[in-house]
Image 1: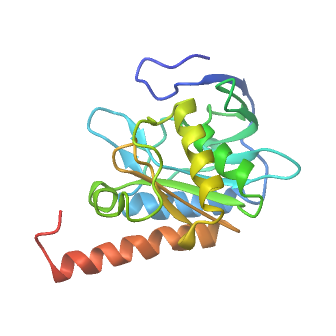
Image 2 (image 1 turned 180 degrees about the vertical axis):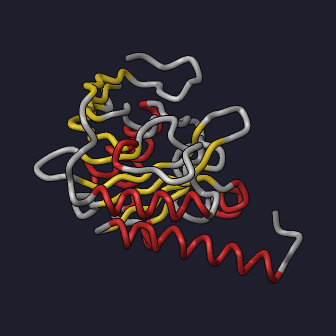
Length: 212
């Protein structure tokens, strides 16, 4: 399946329609996705383009991730998840199965899992003010690498390999306006790392209302 008409998916998506993934970790993906959606860190733009996604590593391979174009749904369920069975950044291809195709940022999640064997959960959120404040201050991917492209997957790979470790488990996506990611040993650690940045931002705005 090529990129759709709204530009969500920019990789070749080999999607097998199937029932909702039956995995106990689905509850963690759903819980954190819905919590972050209530904060506006995951959602949909006025033009209908969704943003933000949550994934967890599955054993023995692949990962469970929120589906593409689900940002407008206030509270998702298992029927809005997809299992990525394989992802090839070089070939720009994702193989997945579930009720909906995988998120357009699946290759970005795959890059984290490939490099960081300790990472068992990845979260991608959007916030313009946080992105502007922390780009270049926190670890940041190449500004030439755009969202949902193999270039972004390669940029994340280079960033993670270059740093060896990412203090705090959060990095900015330099070529993806508003986008940033967090990872952790489980969904709670990744989610709490997002909330730590969010809380710091909210405190900063309280102290300085002029902050964007």
